[in-house]
Figure: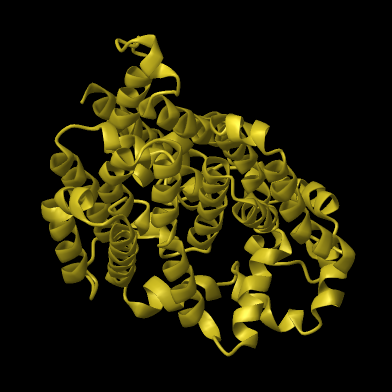
Length: 442
């Protein structure tokens, strides 16, 4: 409880300091720091559904998560996360909450018609990254490798055109991330911990942004990367290793910052080190899979490293060069509290305590690390990746969406919380308050 209180205090200080800085020198470039949002209390068509999903999950989620057959639990978790995300997005209405999100001037759908000749566009992609270059890309297109934009180009090509289909794609795919995290936790730690974490993954405040940005889709790709790698190192599956590598390669071409998922993948490999030592072909399969997407883009003419160097220049040319590092380096963490809820800081402390507690069982019982220790390693890797992203200075503001892929991996720590219904209720209330009091930018 004290940790949750400290996290709440961090949010309050970030809000007050942010308002003061923005009102005095206007360098934050957000209306309701630390979030990109504006104060606008409102209700919407998704309000009744959101209240219903929250109430049912709080009341029945913990018990059902323990009783349902595993595959049914995964399907139920995805369906409930889908309902929760859709209902929160629809609080702002269909157009504002879903269909119009990816069609604004900075978003991917603005440039669909410029990809008529995909190979030619990829060859010339880096020529339009800098802010003052001819026909410069909108912010999000320039700020990501082209696989992000190509996703929506391909949706358009198969007939799923417009912001509505793009929004539905991001929500439906993004909601699968909770199932992927559960699979990884079960494989690497224990099924019991995965089951207890399930309601917290479903009812995460992160859903406020999972349904309103392409980063929800990115979060799902990274989650399945880790889940498949976890299956590979626990079951010795070459197919899972290759598929994980393939998705990691795609991850690197969806977002430059998500290359930090290599830290989480390294933690998974360490947890499954015995299997990897016994079957080094797993590592070969993963590396081979990881080479596919980079090779395809390189052969098509896109230079990832050149594009990243140009992006760092554009970041300084835009508001990233104005936003003060001294505020955002800690205010970003307040954003993370709002994304993961107050339950997560409390759970992180409990996870660290449980993992560091001296073992009381006989040594022979501890031939394998305890499930809580294994869970702590996975969560710590995600936290480390998030902190590296923070210290880099390339994520000043808007981390409520940018860090969604990392934030999801902090939520499994909630499996160790006592009184899960009370904490779930706190998570739901926070998400509902954010969505109904603020008009979020994503």
